[in-house]
Length: 129
Image (tube, rainbow, N blue to C red; front, side, top):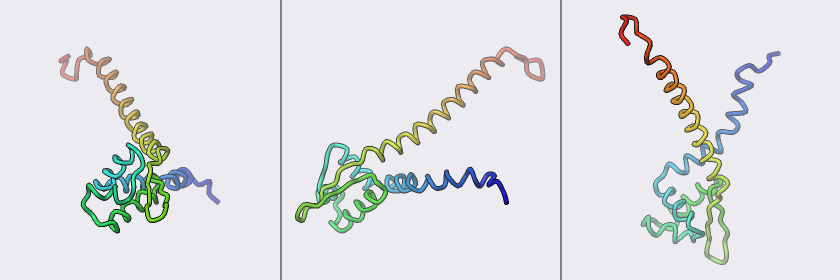
């Protein structure tokens, strides 16, 4: 019997990633990003989302389904009209993930800057400052 080691640590992370993977996959398509931009101004019908993209209703609906499957978009149907709205919670989780990565990079750059500033006056191996 093992204690899980690295696999025990990686498994929960891998279990979390697919939802975020689906969000970034959905946002990788420029047409879907345009739909998300439109929905950030308020709800819209599927046909309204497809209009600026010059695509069929069936193609638009497929894109909406991708956005719906990852949780970025909610939809409801009244009669023959399907209305979509943005799910800000899922959008915030992707934003939070990006902000956390940015914060880590900025911290590393700050540490590098501190190190370089602290060692700026020390001579190198040839005695040069």
